[in-house]
Amino acid sequence: MKAAIMGGTGVYSIEGIELEPVTAETQFGNVNLMKGKGRWENLYFISRHGTDHSVPPHKVNYRANIQSLINLGVERVFSIYAVGSITDVIPPGGIGLISQFIDFTRDRVNTFYNGGDSGLKHTPMDQPYCRALGEKILKAAAERKIIAAESGTYICTNGPRFETPAEIEMFKRWGADYVGMTAATETALAREAGLHFAAVAYSINWAAGVKKDLAFISNNEINKIKNNLTDIALEVLFGEISSCSC
Image (cartoon, rainbow, N blue to C red; front, side, top):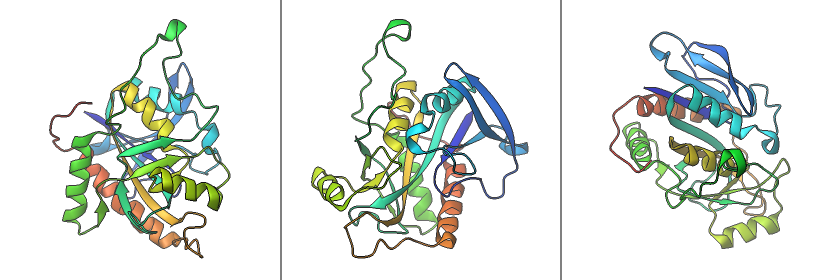
């Protein structure tokens, strides 16, 4: 069984695992991935913004990334997202599952089905994320005495600019708990592809206007969270999971 970790801001590698670069060709463009060696030969890693963080969120080739995983035979994906906290579901430095999303992006291709040769498909989104993987993630976090929110709503903005306090206030009224710029697009495509897809958010600051101070966490804190999440990912992705609807 093959699996993948997808990382965004602050997640550019997997601690303790030797990775080699590989290029996957897709009809949507080539994707530069990292592939594990030795016992981790069935693990792939994608840094969605590039390891030098040079690709802005509205220009990530989401279709190519997800298609590359499909072509490689990947079945399970653990995706990590840096967010700004709107509510105290996860404060800065906290982590939690993403259980729902609101898509506030524009001018992005967020489907494999555009009609014509690609056909048309209406994909259900009542359960955007794999429940079985989510349960395993929460259990693995608890065993490490890491507090993880069981659910939360992610609102996806277009970027690359940050949001205004007025926008954040509106998003809060809509029921959003945290804000980011990538998860909705990625999730929709992964769901269309039928992948076992789990998404974990980690907060690096309060969203604009929520507090007087944005309260960005330190690079050391980001590294600690990243290492905890990748450890959990490795355990969950290659362990047994219960049946689900994915």
